Image (cartoon, rainbow, N blue to C red):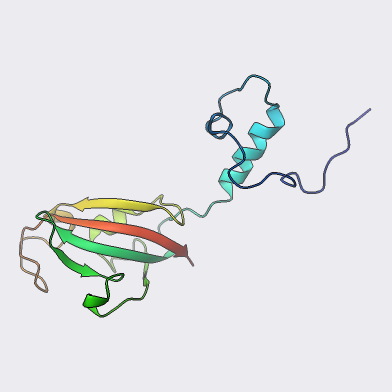
Length: 143
């Protein structure tokens, strides 16, 4: 005799309720195999940035000495709105096009961008040529 199947297999599971071991795929003593599979399905539903996606980002850009040169979350820079661009289309520096692939919505990351993946050897908009740049980024959404 078969067990009845729930219409929604995730019913009754709250976000964050599955253990880290189950999420990583490790077999946990006393934990049913079905729960491990559900956690994998749940992880697959997260939006992950890929080439061609339009990303919605918050960011702060700093020099290696810690001085901020741009930000869309600090009002003193005059543009406190999420930044949108198409990933992989060359609309941003290479360090962003390469470094943001695989990010999940809601994830925060620090990108250290060498000059060859940033603005190169020439000065650009107040950024000295040859600068290594540090960006605190947050993926707010994907369109």
